[in-house]
Image 1: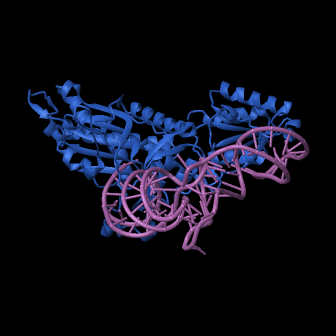
Image 2: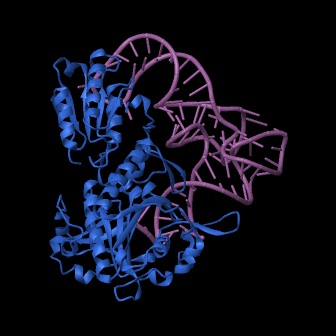
Image 3: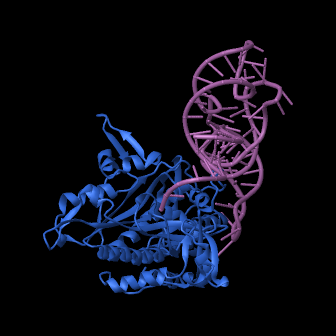
Length: 445
RNA sequence: CGGAGCGUAGCGCAGCCUGGUAGCGCACCUGCUUCGGGAGCAGGGGGUCGGAGGUUCGAAUCCUCUCGCUCCGACCA
């Protein structure tokens, strides 16, 4: 993409309403525009990041054997009356009446609807296990939305639902989700720690939240410092292997890690003092096992191998896709702007032409651009007629992890500059070498 | 929902107390110079001052109502 033809409304000054760094940078980098309290338009740059995150979530869900689909944002109230949550959910649910005076709602989550789909089409244990998921906009009418997309009323979320014959199978689904989530967050350049949590209005016995450590996090968290040394890495795991998935769960949950909701000071104090950590975290996902909480009242049953009709065991699992955009910025930025991890960057590499209109630099930039595209990458070429300082400031703000700088001085010696946004370190090399290096960095991501 | 604020040009703000017909910086447009970390000079365009009532000869300014937004608290992917 050529910046001169793109839509990137960057702001030099900090918008007054933005209190935290991710919100400030998302506004300044032209990623979002607020339309109402807690409701945002995603401008092209923000939309790109949102889609990258969504894509990673899809890939990891599909890798784990989960099946994508799509449910609507608007739901009939009757489904929620069946589960009893129409009254329980309270003011947070946005209720709508259509022209025929039918009660509708903008879905805050989809347990009821997925259960309705399941009971309509699945009748035998032979169809299990089954895990369906979708990525769809949700609405929760928060009393006080804040922090930009981190606490919006409308938000984009992956929610998945598993249906299993037995509790044991459903707990495997739980473990499998934990593994897939660890992979998902690591691909986004995040460390998200599973912490024992409270089940809230979803209900159920077993639940873990995934928290990204950040000073601006909304939850207070307590953990054993050993847990931050754990990495899932690029392990090859068989998602159908119950023991292997359970082993990962045990590895990542055996050390103390809890949110303030479930924190137990006595247990915490058994950890050696030098390993005790109290910090803040951003919740970016949660997994639940809730058994037959919905299947029983809503009649989601299958016939087992003995001919008996039994309610299925279920769980649900969520990843806050739009919140992750903010969470990643909270975890990865400096005083100049955002620093995107390679996995989610809106463009792979920036190209800065220091002397727009100069035949040599224009030509070299064009060749570098074409070579990057040929390598399967998406570069953002700043071809505006701006001074160097303005171009550098824009690139730093929007946070592309790599930048190739092309100036007349270097070019005279056949060199361009490759700069890491994260370290700020630059290296001079030939244009071909710079392209090759960038291509290599993204290989396998 | 309780408490506290704010709505004046695309963004950031001043003007309001003490009514007299709107201003600054950035951004935008034109020209010249400049050109490796948010350039300089000159010129220019853009605002029914959130909305509705009221007081007044006259309202951005005073009064009433209303809408929106933000912050602190209780709640949340």
